[in-house]
Length: 131
Image 1 (cartoon, rainbow, N blue to C red):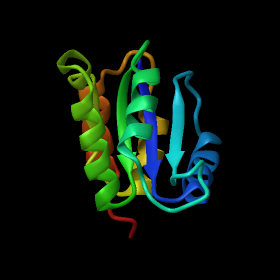
Image 2: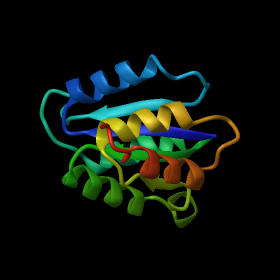
Image 3: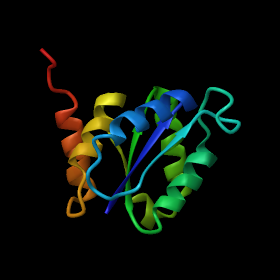
Image 4: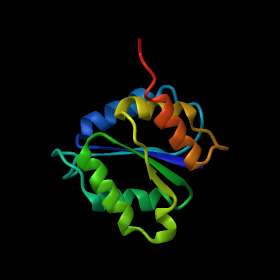
């Protein structure tokens, strides 16, 4: 199973994205977020918080991460590097627009999909023209 983790500099933004796309989630898989630092009271991302959430999710799942801005990607990469080499192979960061990528991850994810396939679908489908 593939868990989806949203990483944002802003707690309200992360929560709003997760709340919105959760309405379209039909399959049972972990879908969580980390937003901000200082328990969501300040803007930013923290590689230790990300590592802790990844470690929690990796107990039973591979994890696809969607990030909002450049430094959230950098801190997620750092968090992945803190993991053991075995666990590192079970995490991927999607190169996709934040909202659209999250939406595709949620609507495309199902129990039989693997991490590489879900990542590919997110990176491909989230870039489709809107008009």
